[in-house]
Length: 129
Image (cartoon, rainbow, N blue to C red; front, side):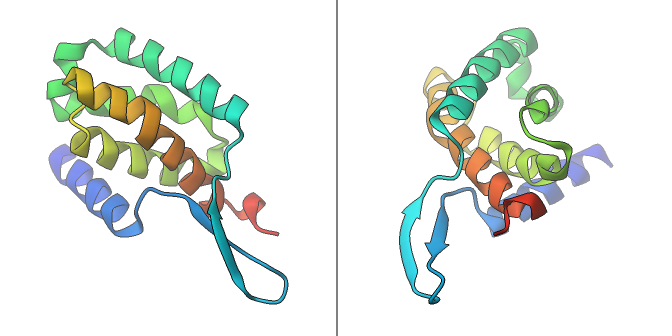
């Protein structure tokens, strides 16, 4: 049952995607893609991700339960209203980035984590204008 939950979460995150948001002007014109999360929030998230990876243990990241532990450790970075979107994005990213490898952890922390922060920010009702 737990495996199905993880697969479903990964599928949802893949459909929704983890990326930057597109801005729209009051006139309705679509602008450039800009990140939503502030650089200080990203820096803090990167520090926490490193701590969570160390806490979970690299060998544990090979299993879906280990990756779920990592995601649960990180979910507190965002407000409760944003946690579901954030967790879905991180779950997908942890697998696709292969966080159990050194290169995968680097990609997860430096690319996917900031993208998931942006995605969850736009998914929150409080992020709407």
